[in-house]
Every structure is written in C-alpha cells, then in structure tokens.
Amino acid sequence: GEDVEQSLFLSVREGDSSVINCTYTDSSSTYLYWYKQEPGAGLQLLTYIFSNMDMKQDQRLTVLLNKKDKHLSLRIADTQTGDSAIYFCAESPGANNLFFGTGTRLTVIP
Amino acid sequence: EPEVTQTPSHQVTQMGQEVILRCVPISNHLYFYWYRQILGQKVEFLVSFYNNEISEKSEIFDDQFSVERPDGSNFTLKIRSTKLEDSAMYFCASSGQQRLFFGEGSRLTVL
Image (cartoon, rainbow over all chains, first blue to last red; front, side, top):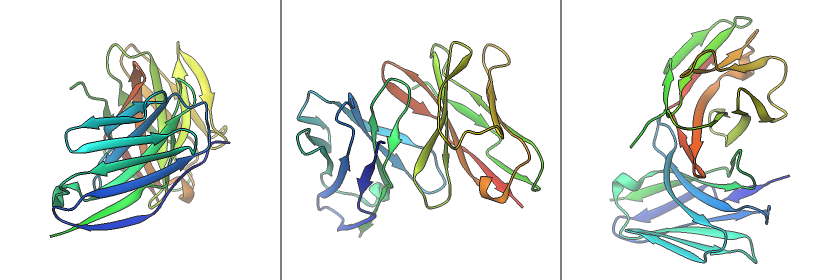
C-alpha cells in the first residue's frame, strides 16, 4: 500500500531556509501536495506539484520532486515565526483520495 | 477562496452514543471525503463519495460508520456506538480539479 514518510521535527532560526523532506512509495501518484496545519486548525493547502515536473516555485516556497527516488521536498526561504506549524506531505495515486505522511513539526526560533 | 464548512467544531459524547458530523462542501464540487486525525498521528483517509454513493473506503470505515448526502448541500458522517478510540479530529474535504479543499475539522471527544 501507499506509504509516505517524513522526519518528525525540524528547528530553524528565523531568516534561515527550512527544508522539509518526504519520501513516498506509489510511483503512479499524479500529484503530490504540501499541507500546513497550525495548532488546532485545519489543513491548509500550501502548494502541489504535478508528477511530470521537477520543480515548482511559489513566492517563498520551492518544491523539488525527484521521481526516480520518490523524494519530495519543500523549501521555505526566509523562514518566519508564523511558519511554525506541522507540514504534511501527501500523495494522490488516484483522483479520489490522498495519503498523508506523518507530518513534520517545524519550529522557528526567533 | 471558497470554503468547506464543518459543524460542530467540537463535540463531546459518552461512549456508546451516536454522533453525526456535518459538512457543507464547496458548491460545484462533485467528490466529497472524510478523513480522521487521531491526536499526534497522521491524517487518515476514511471514505470518498461521488454521485450519491461511496466510491472508496478504507479499512477504518467499518459498519460503525456511514455517510450521507441528505440534501443538495450537506454531507454527513455518522458514527454509531462511539468508542473511546473514535476520539479524533474529523476533516471533511471536497475536490475540484485535483485540489482537495479541507474544512477546519470537527473534534470529537468520547468519554
């Protein structure tokens, strides 16, 4: 079955770049997603990438996809304290559902 | 941006009681979903719904659970005979053009 893995914790200093990594197993996934969850809140879609792309940039966010290694990363430039949250990687092997990783808790140190 | 809305935001219930969680998906979306997140764990897929029937469900979605679209706007998740381990955040989602839009979630606490 599908399995999406992430490291559980990441700490960075304010102003530095954060890189959150994810590995997935289903090579048929057509889209891969990054969601942000702030404490007690819902899931906010940050960005997504189509599987035939290597990179997508959206303001401070850069997504890199290595389809051969089934590795996805999210880089946040100039990380701010407001970026502190849990970040979930998710893959979509079909049109109907998402499989989420365990989430990476990003802590930004002022 | 359009929103998925969920009610209640928090429900506390006694073990064995039935609970109904409600969702209003985005109006022109056709696929609807329920996901669950037990505290501190990953978000897990429960069920997807299309054309007034379940299109896919996970192993978690057993006979204790049911979904319904009773009218043109609401999408509900019913949990019968709740157990302590049903305590979780339940997220509704709807999709259009490969993007899933999630609600804020309904926190269920079973005592």
